[in-house]
Length: 230
Image (tube, rainbow, N blue to C red):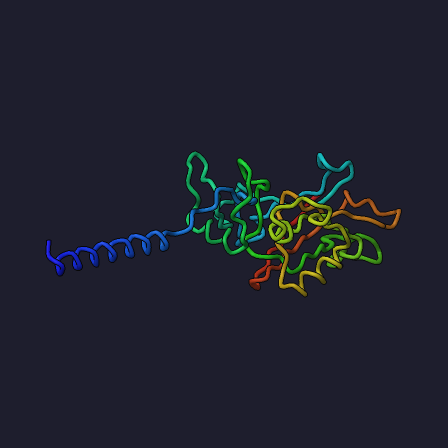
């Protein structure tokens, strides 16, 4: 083999090695091996999509307001599942939503929380649907009587899913609304959010009244759910 030929072969080998190394460097990063913490994102289109009850739960012996997806009204909401029932696939668009909230690497065999609103909530209002008292006729805000217990999902994600003493928040509904307005909305799982009446006048029996619960979202939309207790 002549000198010129050996030079060409050496050059070709060098180019091949350079291309091989470059290709290795351009290999995409592996996908996260964990799971999202939320299994379903839910976007109500009408108030009928939201099912609110006022009753005791497993975690509380006193009545509390809880919110769920009204699965009997499937045409009243949009929904995105991490796993479509009976398959190993996500609803198209689910991964984009999870990435939007950086909820992509919860290391568990399944999501911790069942459902979450698609948009952040920037205000919650509880309104008397009948005469709550002489001072609070139908249409009056009852926010001042309400406390809220919820999981701050973005805080939880931001700490790498560290279940420390700060990921669960408790305080007045007015305080929640003020904070939500200041940060552009709050993301919380529906199955770990409770609204609780406190410091009611002694002559009021809250389980005997009806209510309207209004959620206002950061995208400018809102829905009203009716709570009928009689």
